[in-house]
Image (spheres, one colour):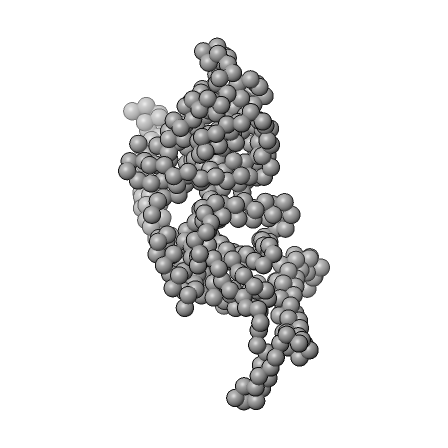
Length: 254
Length: 163
């Protein structure tokens, strides 16, 4: 036995216990290394789930407070960002309501002072103005935005080519909306002599209604309600040209 | 009830877009040039595999580059016909870029590449010019003589509705 072999033998005798302990530690470490990811995943997932549920409760007040402070400190920026949107909505609403009010006043005045109008008493004794000129719906076109193709139409008198009309209306509408670059604004009315074309915009299509007669704002307001009702009832999912045409006829003749 | 399809003719001004549509729809031709302002719409009903197809044809004003065309005129198009004038190289020298524009923005819409005014040129000679520029065109037609006009539109219908 040489010196190095003697040294190794001596090491084994002296360090045997430590050696075994070290081996056990390495083995345990290997086991933990294999077990840990599985266990950690469960723990992390549970903690995340718990944290997600607790967010509204724990972070809600903090976020609200932070937002409140941020808004308070940046009032000008917030106002600047919201003003065009809210301002436009309010302006449009007020303009419309004032126009209706103005028309009602004018109608009352005309009814009172015009020699062409006369009054009759209703059962309750309230005065009622009888209109001499009546607005009437002549044609209705449901038109696909973009392509300008007719989805459905209703007309009292078939005089014009609906494909050409819908195409040209779409082209005019596109031109006006592009040319004036009014952001999200849309063409809503075309007027020519005794007729008006009321345009009601929806997301993928628009409805153009040709009206004869004065078609004041209150008439158009009622028409808008009617068009919204029609859209809600019949323009969902797949639409068939013939079915829409029939629905339009039933809807607007009733 | 027939199916309706929107077709837009695009290309530079003066390439003969309006003349092609008038030849196809009304079978007429006029030598006097009238600039299209905005858009002019015509329609024609054709028969395809026993079905009536209404083609709503948008004749839009010519632009020196298609990216100057109002996007709203091109929306919802079922098929494009890109028209060039072989007598004016400016109408086809950027053809690849202009076709790329259509492909990028309307990837699913078929395009027919058309050389109009074929009565004014030697078609074989012009094909050599196109070959040098590595351009491939689908049809040669003449709105003046009516040559191939009907075929162009029917080929587009076939592309739109499938063979």
